Image (spheres, rainbow, N blue to C red):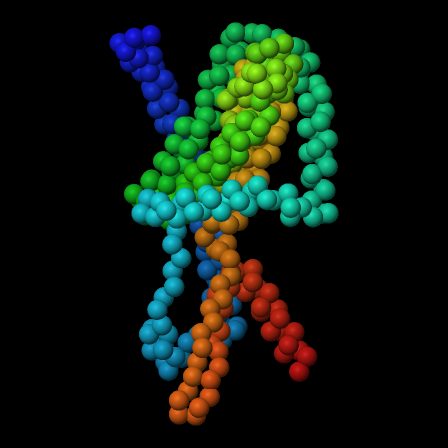
Length: 346
């Protein structure tokens, strides 16, 4: 291949990547815009609840306390973004540590979904080869499936999430920007996990070898960098769908987001690029990773913070500690219940 032939080969790929990116961004925007009224109602109700909580607890600062509070330095956590790329890398590193060590935190209650998932994966692995044989080879179906699955590629899902982020910044829509930021983090985390599993399993694709999807079929003599297990398209599309569905929790958006991810996952099987077990495991991992990112990095889900500072009063010769607690919403509810119990016990 000569250098003159490179532009002819790369131009269609670049053009297709741009088309998939633009289409994915439009799909994400359409999903989010359809839930704008529902989200506005949720925000309004949350604001009313916050005002009611303040009026009941009676924690409004008095005029004597106001100057003291103004003198205290405000503590703002750094958020991942274009101006804090180091924070983004740090978040992804923490996410990877938490994701790979998550099996150590499995509890008995997790058997509710772990047992069906393991059983479904085992059945799918057993019938993978037969499923592809029954599906057969149809060029028109394969071409159409490849077109659909292109919307779940890394450059489409990551590009769509990045597009939402910059669109949110440009329109001063913090919630839209957060959705794009979380979506990009979820896609990157899914991509890293999937690529590591591909390297570890080295499974043949349906159009390779004898079509049975063998794991390490030739030992270490033959090694593929882009294995079949699990499906990256399924993982990345479900990770992005989970973020969108969590950030805009309305039924139409949730149904559309997961249907979109499911269509991409199914197209990978009908395109003979993956086996059913590949998309089952990839989609499940993407869904879980998307939820992990939302729980740890979404606004309002920050972990509680505890500040302790020593206090010494020279006039009286006394000393002590000052404790400031910045709880999240869930912990604030627990603290309120605890205070109520203590009052009732008096």
